[in-house]
Length: 187
Image (cartoon, rainbow, N blue to C red):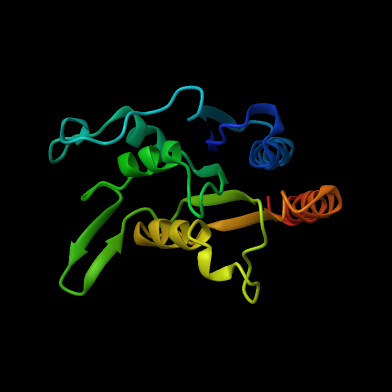
């Protein structure tokens, strides 16, 4: 089994999403000692924003896309910045959504081409954005990621730590809840 571990938080060691992706990856390593793990830190080594020059020619590929396609499991750290994903993560996503490789169009609409892939996303958010909360209408990270990965045929799994900036007690409770969610993941 091959696992691609992606972090995108710009906050380094204080990042909750990085902590959670490390926990998920560690849990999967324990369950599968022969797992091969590739690590990509999009904050330390950011990809440029997508340009026409970055697009592969029809039938061709790129190293980023090949790495994604070769992974059986992808663990992604996705902190919420300004109600959505980081630009670093967006630049990576722009390179894996490739017509003919991860999706195709049909007479009835788009068809995802990688439904066998498992994607686990660790989300961290400063406020509470879950259904029924006052901030729910401003949540554009989890919903975006569900749409993007659904477009290529995957129903991602989420581990969410929210309320990180409300106060120390809320932060600790959110991290505890997220770590329980990590422990409950099927391996």
